Image (tube, rainbow, N blue to C red; front, side, top):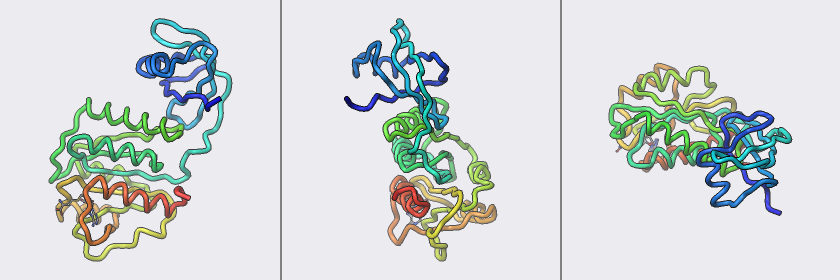
Amino acid sequence: MSAPRRFFVETIGEESLLSGEEFRHAKNVLRLSAGDEVVLFDGSGAEYSAVIAGERKDGFLLNVTGKNVCEREPNADVYLLTGALKGDKTELVIQKATELGVNKIGVFSSRYCAAYLSENKTERLRRVAREAAKQCLRASVPEIAVFEEFSAALRSAEGYGNRLFACEFLEHGREVLPLSGSCALVVGSEGGFSREEFALAQSLGFEGVSLGKRILRAETASIALLSVVMYGLGELR
Ligand code: SAH
């Protein structure tokens, strides 16, 4: 028999309800029914085994039978700050960053940023993070924060042991690796950064890093930098 299917539920008690989109998916697509075993997670880092006990109009009633520690959670503490990107590129970055093991994602607006941020959009980004966590078997969902002010985004990284700023016009940067401890990473949007924004970041303790002599697209830059950092922190081995 294949592994039990995983579902995200807002709150998990001894009895829980699988409702909304997750319920419709379980019932109509996966054709689950009473007696089937499932795994539940609420984004907090633990997983629960459960059995579908019955069906109501608004969802499956679940009997939670056990709690397990998820072994797929990252040990690294990595925070990615990305400029808001056009179209569905921010969603792409959130999906990939979640798979690669970030704990937190900040989306910011900055001087040359052309994409807008809104409540609806933020809700969609959170859903993307949940879906990605579910798919890659993580039990915690990265927190998504949105910043209208670039300086507030930078300040939200206070306390991280390493603060790296991917700067496309950098002349002398630090090497990304070796690296240890917690890590905040800043990557710009399609429009890139202004000199003033980089200077502000430096004054707040960020170190500039280069991603080589070619200019990468914003989404490529986030995924490339995160991959290197996660490798350096032992998460991709
Ligand atoms: N429009 C800008 C490029 C922006 S690229 C220009 O024409 O110069 C988007 C973001 O990806 C940048 O702000 C930076 O954070 C990151 N990035 C892309 N290529 C990079 C490189 N070679 N080194 C460091 N960061 C890079």
